[in-house]
Amino acid sequence: MEENSAVKMPPFNFGDPQLWFIMAEATFQLAIPKPITVSATKYNYCVAHLSPEAAAIVRDVITCPDKDDPYKQLKEELIKRCGESKSQEIRCLLAGEQLGDRKPTDLLRVMQRRAENHQISDTLLLELFLQQLPKNVQSILLAISPLNAAKVAEIADRIMLVTPPEVSKISSSNSCEKVNNKSNLSQNFWKK
Image (spheres, helix red, strand yellow):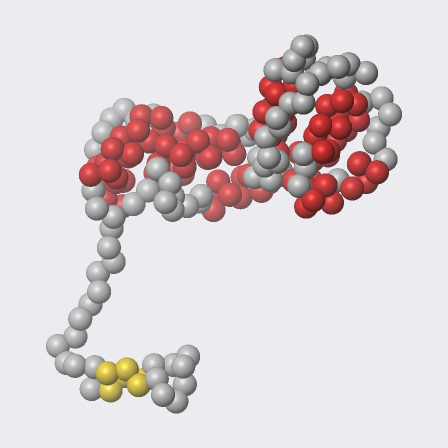
């Protein structure tokens, strides 16, 4: 077995196990005095750094690892079991990833990651991305031509920095109304 100093593994990422393995493999390359290349050593580092929840998902792989290449088996199974399936990625793209508190450029990166394994045109991805932006930002961006997703996201970031968030209009009535919620908390009775 090769002699290496301990490497600092990143915490397991349920949201993107494929990225976690890329980060782990980069960590293995940084091992001193030489990179970690033995499958069993990589496997042991990964298993030791899995959360209990992630370990439970691949319990069968941990309890009975492949004799020839345990790291490859662990990697494939964790990605398959914890990552989004191709149909889930498509559904998330079509259902609309919400902007929330993120910057538009962050939202675009998530959408691009979901689209990278599919043959989704840049035009469709741009349209799906635009639909997730506030209406006031959409209207400004639609006036700009030509558009590409990266440029749109950068401009949207700047627009949202200087534009206050959209506020829903609250309609008011001329008559005074009181809410009576004494009899039933789930229903409001309006009195004039």
